[in-house]
Image (cartoon, rainbow, N blue to C red; front, top):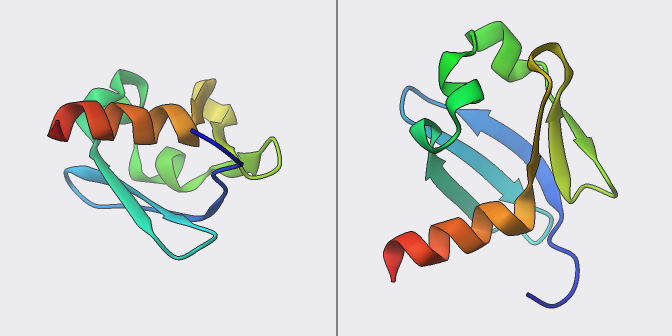
Length: 80
C-alpha cells in the first residue's frame, strides 16, 4: 500500500465493522475477524477514537487497536 489510508468514521452493525475513509470509500469486514470486538458490548464498540493520524482505531476500554491498512489488506486477501 502506498500513502496513508485515513479513516473518517467507524460504524457497526450485527455482523460488520464499517470504516469510512477520508476519500469516502468504505471498508466493511466481518466483526468475527476481530475477537476482542466480537466480544465487546455496543457501548464499548462505539467508544473508539482514531489514532496515528487517523490510520488506526483504538478501543481503550477493551485495550484493542486496529490498523486501517492491515484491515484493508485482510479484506483484499479474503476476496482474492
